[in-house]
Length: 410
Length: 111
Image (cartoon, rainbow over the protein chains, first blue to last red):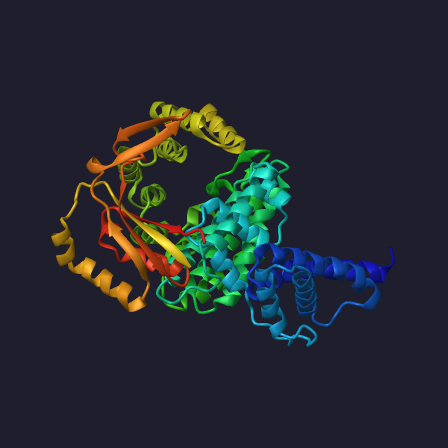
């Protein structure tokens, strides 16, 4: 293969990453047909692969691809003689396909992401639909990432698209009065995608790993599309700050806690970007749970070593988070910070309160946190019992190995 | 889009028709429907003690007392609305007094 061919192929791959969601979003807007939009986007990228090596890479690949996909949709709808299709053909033809689109195509991706994350869709379907239509992952890739059989994942996507059509879920950015709730739903989907990739077991699960990159990419897109909203920036900052530490989270397949991570290996560029993103969010002066979580992550990222961690600040931030987004997991994390500030007994009291609520029964980090505080307090026998409970509940090998090593040290 | 709103609750509250008509939340809901011009038809159902379920199995007609679904909440009323999309149907449903203690199931109508 010659060099120009390689360059054209790379350009198509880059365009796929950058433009897929935009092309699909525009085609859904024009045709109202999600399957047709995906098919025509696919065809447009195939056409790019065939023609760009010969004709060169167009100046505006996104516009080229959108036009190609739209022309393809027009052809397909012309051939389709059904009444509904005729109506849609008119909608497509109303925008003269011969006329090259302007360089500034209105960005339709915001409509797409809000529709994908509509609360009337089951949560797993929102995640799958976002990854398929917006990020351009194949059904097979999504199935692998979520350890699901491909036919089941395909079925999930089909059902979701059918519900959008049959239940009349609008293809739009929600109006102002619905925006806070709907935006929270979008952010929850992105954060779940990130966490699915982040919580991989350190094995060769590259399909899951790719999810963190996709979540960050989608986070950047969302920030670009909603520059005036602080929480998308807060989430992006949070993801960047977590991602910066990824390489140090396990060592030889054993979980490494924050305290013992090799901070010299944290990704400084990601931390800087995360902190700058958080600052930009805070400048908008409307705090929210993602910004607070990012601020906590920034406290950890900014400490040169574990001993110089600003625990009073972290405890205060967890208290704020508990107000904004109350949850027993937040209380558990807060207990750790309180233990560092006010002493272990104060922290243990809070952990026991969480345990007494029963809300975290079966959650391995409850006994693991308790065990850690007991160990620090020198109460070895109780710590041993708690580590054993945690070991039974821990979901990943890396965590089990870590807990087992703690047990041996007692 | 046409939707059937299934007004559900567990019949613990069960306001009378008069109480319902006097409920300011219900009045506001009716006014909202009128303003939208969304109401096609609607009816309140008598309680489940008055219901009868019929099944035919192997050619035999089986009649039982009580509702079809063995769930906590039962359909107590049906309102058919026509509105722009699911978001508007959700808005309408959220205004119904039963949404505060029971629930409103939105079912798109097969057309």
